Length: 496
Image (cartoon, rainbow, N blue to C red; front, side, top):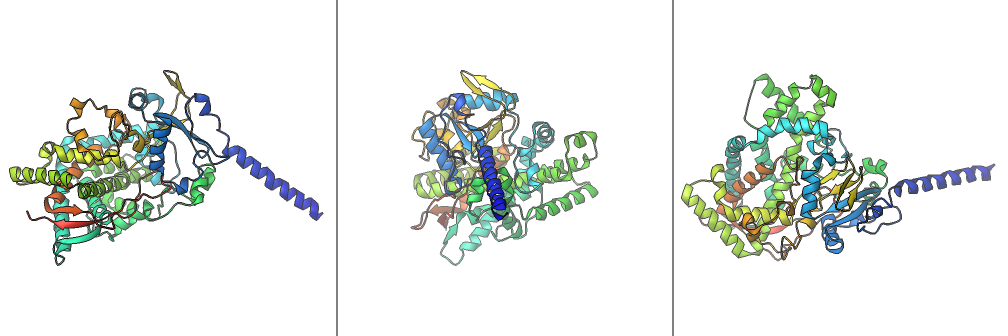
C-alpha cells in the first residue's frame, strides 16, 4: 500500500513537472519561424535565465551590437521582438499603429497600479487619454510653469542653506537631492498639492513613492521564474505597491475638496475631477472605468514622472562634473539668459539651446523607461518581416539610442548632436526615450519644460564636481525602470 501511494505521489509530481516544462516552453519556435536572429534560449527560462542577475538595459546594448537592429528574445515563455531600426520603429509605432494598439496586460501587484494609463487596453486608453490631453496644452503648461519656478527657487534656497557652514561645498547622494525636487515639481505644478518638507528625501510622499518603485530592493530568482510561470508574479511583483493606499486616500480627499468647492486650478488634476464625475455614465460603465481607474490616472504622472525627471537631473549633473567644459557652457548660457531677462520664464526656454541639447543627450544615454512596447493585435508584414498577432514588440531604448549610424561614438556624452537636429538630418525615430506614436509619453512636454526650468535655477547657483568615490553602477533584474546605486558628487555653491 505504501509503495502504491509513493508511486502515485511520484507520478503526480513528475506529471506536474512535465506539465510546467511544457507550459514554459510552449511558445518556443515562434521567433525562429520569423527568420530573424534570436537570442539563445535556455531549457525553460527563455533567453533570460539569469534575468535577476543582469542589468537589463546593458544587456540590450550588447544584443543590439551582436544581433543588429532587429532580433527576438524570449522573456521567459513570451516571445518578444526587439526593434532598433528607425524606419521599422516609425512603421510599427506610428504609420501602422492600428496593428499595434495595445500594451501587455501586466500584473503590477495592485488593482490601482494596474489601471494606470499606459497599461490600459486601447478603447479604455483612448477615452482617458483624450480627456487628459487638454490639460497639457502650451497655455496650461505656461500656467503650471509658474509653480515649477517657485519650486525650483525654493529648492536652491534650501540647498544653499544645506551648504552653510561647510565652506560652500558638501558631498551628496545626487538621487536624494533630485528625487524630492522632481516630486515637488510634479505635485505642485501638475497636480496642485503641497508636500510637507518638500526637499527632504525622508518626507512621507518621497519615501512612499520610492517604496512603490521598489527602490532599494533587489531582484530574486522568483522574479526570473515569474516570466516562465506567471502565476508566481504575485510573489515577485515588478513594483512594490505597499503604500498605494496612502496616495489613493490623498487623491480622494483632493478630489472631494475640489468637487465640493468647485475649484479649478488650471492643472492636470482638473481633468481627474472631471473623470470622477463621469463614473456613473454609460460610457465609463461600458469601459469598466472605476474609481480605481481614476485614482490611477492621478497617480500615473507622479509615479512615471518623478523618477524620469530626477534621473535626468542626476545624470546631467554627473556628466557636467565629468566634463568641466560642458558645465562651463551650461552655466554661461544660464548666466547670460538670467542677465538678459532677470528671471527664468516658460516662454523664453527656447533660447536655451545648449541646455536643451544637454537634457536631450542625457535622455538619449540614460532613458528611465528602458523598453517602450506594443503588442501586435493584427498580423503585420513588411519587406519580408512578419509579426504575428500576440507577439510583443519592444524598442530597447538603450540600444536603439546608441545606433552608431545616427549617433557616432554613441557612448560619448556629446550635446552637439542635438544643437541643430534639422540640419544634421537626424531621424526623430532614432531617439526613442519617450516612445512614439499615439501611445507615446503624455507628459513629454511637461517633463522637458520642468527639467529646463529647474536646471536653470540649479546651474545658476551650484556646480558639480567628481569625488574619489563617484561611481555609476546600475541595478540588476529591473525590466521596467532604469535603477542605479548612489551617485556621489560634491555640490559647490557658485558666486553669482
